Length: 492
Image (cartoon, rainbow, N blue to C red; front, side, top):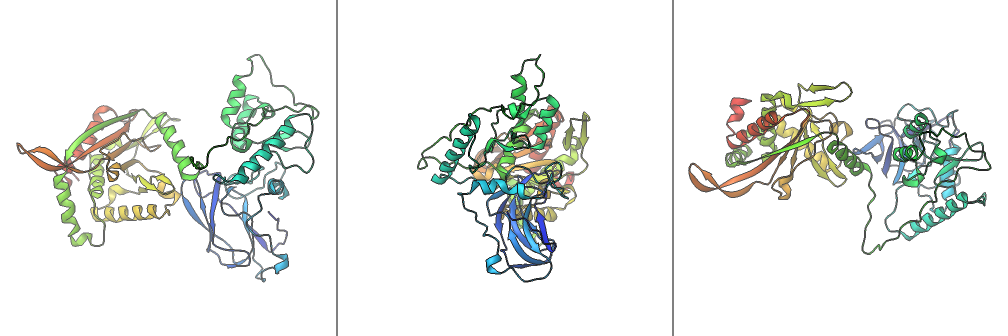
């Protein structure tokens, strides 16, 4: 990455486009060096842990340089594009910056780039958003089953072996992935600021910790493991002299696998965030799930009638619309179910609004955008909001704000032909309703066995907030409305 010194060149830094996000991956560039851009023009698309987001440039000018190629994961606060705002022409061909795609054979240059940036006393640049420019090298997206990747990993392992032995690596050797040189000649271990603070609070020297994270990064678990391995009577040792640096355990060689029989998919972005959220929810909130099978024949008839109603012209009417309305009515009758648990204050927070989440499967993974203030919407308004939410999710354009502050969620597993399930709560919410497939089944109706449209509902709830009685009332109300949808009028 080239550092721009011209005063007329403005550096646009990766913003924090969500709540506390630390990095984002550049999915696509919409401009190239030499292009003219205007204030508000979208220049690239990035993927965060929550969604894909388009980034507009806040300047008028000419693009001088794209600092990172597509597929690069960049820390928040790192400059990603340089724009000449003086109104001058694009640079001449011989002075043009290097193309975005950087050769894979120069890892030393890539790892040295962040050190070329002007630094403050703490080694990080002051920025207006996020956590500042990280001192570690920006990570490239791993390539699947590429032979050159394994060659690079083997080379990195060889360098690491030299660093861990008694023979220093040549000055021209690639930088080691497990640390960076500091003033006294030792390697500065790689760790994120929260991990460094944890190590400082616990009195752990990061130089003595064996990293297990990607690219040799020390994790919180590594710090705790180091504390557990230290005798209770031990005190933190002084910093080792430059001649005898702490020797971390050798990095194991990459495991080879048959690329014709296996495919490895990096866990990142939406999938990574979803996995972490589900694990946290499952092991934090005590889940209880109740089930009910209900005859929804009348609801299905009402759906067909609404499709012909002029008030719903141009709107998508589906069983999910009436199920969502039934849940909103049940919440109005049992408001205590719409709550959250405040661990710090040891309080139950009852919400007087409903931000109704709808679980949506997208190419980037499962997301749960929500309809804000769904409780205040009429049925046509709810249909319109539901249609917009689904179409936006399918296009991969759901914004981070659309997935925040949900209160309850519906997940429709029936679209996959599944009868029911035991859904995991969306973090911070009190309940989630799973809707199974609606099937024609034999059912006792008015004393006779007849074919009826039947489905199974499953309600999972946080037992700290919702006891069995309250959960049963909510589920029973939803079932009663779907069996007799006229109750929507009398109960709403």
